[in-house]
Amino acid sequence: MFSLQIEPRRLLGRMFALTGKRVTVVGLGRSGLGAAKLLSMYGARVQVTDTRGESELREALQGLPAGTSLFLGGHPTGLLEDSDLVVVSPGVSLQIEPLLVCREKGIPVIGELELCARVTEVPFVAITGTNGKSTVTTLVGEMIRQGKRDVFMGGNIGVSLCDGLVRIKKGERPEPDWIVAEVSSFQLETIQRFKPKVSAILNLSPDHMDRYDSLGDYLEAKARIFLRQDSDDDVVLNADDPMVASLATSASAQVAWFSRKREVSRGVFLSGDRLCWRLGPSEGTLISSGDIRIRGVHNLENAMAAACMALLAGIPADSVAHTLRTFPGLEHRLEHVRTFEGVTYINDSKATNVGAVEKSLESFSVPVILIAGGRGKKTDFTPLRELVQEHVKVLVLIGESADQLATTLGQDKPVVRAGSMEEAVTAAARSAVPGDVVLLAPACASFDMFLDFEHRGRVFKESVRRLGHETA
Image (cartoon, rainbow, N blue to C red; front, side, top):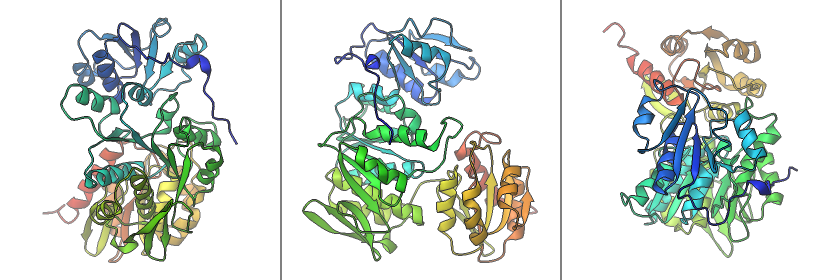
């Protein structure tokens, strides 16, 4: 088992005073822009550096606070080393030379998550894992709202955490009772004192292998979410995921579980068709699994994880159950697009890794025409072979990973190559008969053909909606 440690020289002083401090924000994405705004509000002298140029960052630059110093097109020598604090965006590798030098010199390097934890005392509910983070984050937020408590949701979903705190500090919204944060492994790499009241690790499967040397390194990054928790806090773990379950012995927080395969002593579990909960002396039944509005095996797990976290946050069971009955799900996550000529079209563009596609395919008992491919993440697609053999009728492949997918998965299945999403949808429609499902579950990143997974999903949906209208 790995060792969860922080280098003492990287810790900031306990008061975390920002007024007059020279703070460099590395990377001007959504979180970097929010960090610059928040730092400026606390009196820091903010400078921003990005490898991109002004033309690529025009919109972001318009949102920067007055007085921000800009260094674009690269990271000038000495810029970071002259800083009192460096705030790095999650998409920036900590292994770039300027950041390595900062760490050697003892200059604190933190991220948005740690910055926000330093300037607010609002308790956090924090969710990480390979798949399902956005759905669980949104579910927990809705459960807290249903329980008549004010909540702010952000992080790796929607509004950046820093932007949310800026709005609170400006008085544009009240201070919430809870902050519910979707947290990526990249964000967790830079935490030092972040201490959520309730945390969760949903699952683990190979992803971002272009950033991590091994699955163990990826797991270690995820496990940092409970690094600073203690016996007054709770961590929710997936009892059905062996790697996640193994983390229980490393946690100082109280462990709660969710499981669809067995009863647990503390947490939420499936008993027959009922979601049951047990926390200390209290226990009960939440809802029948058939009454949960969002469908799919993975969404059953998401529902249990969210329910467990909300209950630990003090939300009444009836508020939790009501949310599960009414929550419609998120766009690009097993999203029903259309049923046309008896064929159902499903958008799961967010399925960017093997584990997500496994859950996707497990959700269907009818033949699937699978649209997959994109930019790979140095991922082995072999674990999908058995499920493809069992569920998939035709493979329609796009993007840079099409050859690898065809070699790994297409030996005994018809394979169709497509040069665009529009071609892929047309080819899938030709291969389908009434009762089939056409599923976009790429198992890859989108950046070879699209701006992001949302753009990919929208193009898929637009192509599906045009079916039958091409000659109109």
